[in-house]
Image 1: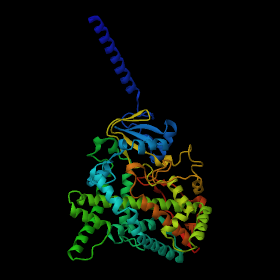
Image 2: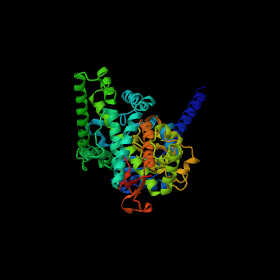
Image 3: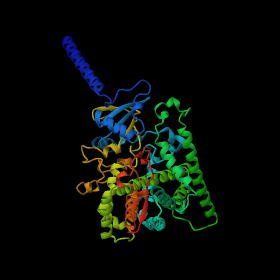
Image 4: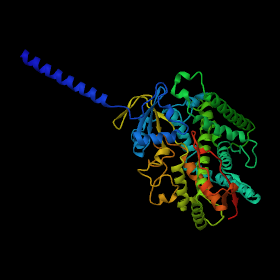
Length: 496
């Protein structure tokens, strides 16, 4: 009996030992995704050069749609295909929902109060709920439709003045000002710039400056030991830019509180909504949350729409046959030279195709907002190490030749046979992200972009300044958190 017990016990121990070893070996066989060999200390930083989205897209052709690089002390995991993006943004969304906080965005502790950078938590849910209900809901957008029409009409009036004088329009500048005034009226019930004046051009510089600084490769992000030195002065500059915007917001708040003391009629804009919420629950919605929410709305709503529209107009100017086709559709559906309403957009498929094709070739953010993992995560037989920086290269996905034909050709007609949506359901085209952390402002963008583009095309003919031929139009990119044209687009409007 003792011998039998000993044999059985030994057998069980041996089987358990073998099972444990097999599990350990199986776990050990999991590895980080493939990638280029790193150099000492700097890792693969030297491979990113001036346009990281392009460099990483080229590396993905060698190492695959999920690859890893070493950037200083940080592991970077890059996702470059729609299938891998679906895994990260949908199937394993929760595991990848935490944001990687760039050092620049730690200025003024912005990341602690921002819906963009907060982790998924009660505060984040509260802020998303406020945005979804009070800012980007269908009812709220419908109620503000007259405001968008008014600002687009002001843009067209400015273009008409340039048309009469034979002057060129700085497309990016005028679209930026239009969007800024639209957002400022939604937030504060007032214009912040005048279309005919450059007196407040500094505000444009502040907003674009934040996007530019936030998009730079910052050594502090990859070598945290440099945090206190801030060798590139990136956080220093962000601190100044945030401070200027926060002062502006503070002035708006003080002005509104003074208005309330004099018992003037209460406005129904976003600032008033936030102040009412703050009065009801000051712990949930204090001054820090108000400032960060206003900053998120300014940066997110203005830069992305401005950049996309400048690219869209540049592409139509570079392809006159596309402009003519869009104008023919507008003339048939709306009437030549007549104002466009938002309700018309659903009957203008070719105009929508132009917007989609622009978002494919020129996604506003080449990398979706960076993510990290709070623990080791298994992804398609690879291990994503805890603390890794995870980037989804939306720019590369939009140019993936395994899905898109003639990837570098601007061809809106491709969407006649491709029923792809940009709202995050089809991962071949994800300019606004997908999953629980998709951009909350996309409903506004999808209303405003075709409205402005269609209005400009249906009101004027356009040609490039200085007799530049369409084929010679410079389409070089300027890398940043938002991809802008390296050379501002200037075009001359003329009567239809």
